[in-house]
Length: 268
Image (cartoon, rainbow, N blue to C red; front, top):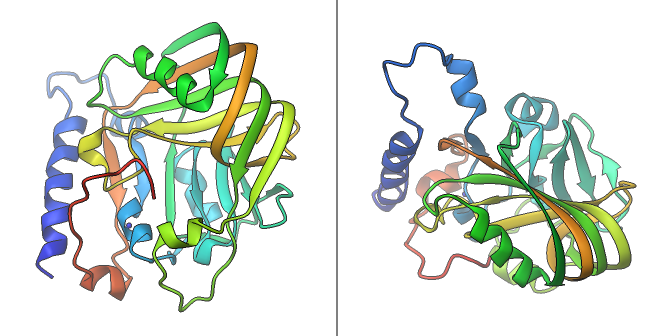
């Protein structure tokens, strides 16, 4: 998530090819290994911004594309988070459950996580300040990174999603104004997410998109705000070579929409 859609997709495709190209002389890297080192995207965030909330991939199929990541379910039927090969659903009740294999997603970002860089820090500050710490660790601002952050939050707020009718095409930003929110205190858990270069901001939120899940797997959602106080935080970073983007080629509305460039891409 016509003529103008090609303006969106073609530059993205060109950038994807540039980021993911490999050295032809390197015969030791298999195609499978190369694919595992990319971020796989089912649809793009711009499709969700324009009210396209239906895809065809099931949870069972999604597992073939990564063991780590985030997304949502068809018609915003809960938030999605993938960690250690398990895909979880956070329904409007906020009670985390293992997602049924038959559930489908309209937007998912997945990868196979293997940390290349780890850093343990003592940190006091809010979510925005923590993101600045993470940004300083990244070797480049023009490549994607899968990022896992573990620590204890003094306060944390995450967002959920309320299911909508199949015919509802309300813009995502409008729906998120009334999304359910869940709060917790003194909670240990894991941030799961990605750094997306600004040039790729039609694919995902840029610079960061994080979901959170507690260690006991009872609390989770889209990470919105929070505070840590003198917390031991472990930041793990996995640099990716590029993107493998599967567009909604069976969705007639996606095929006919006229997408436009966005000046601001850090929000919905």
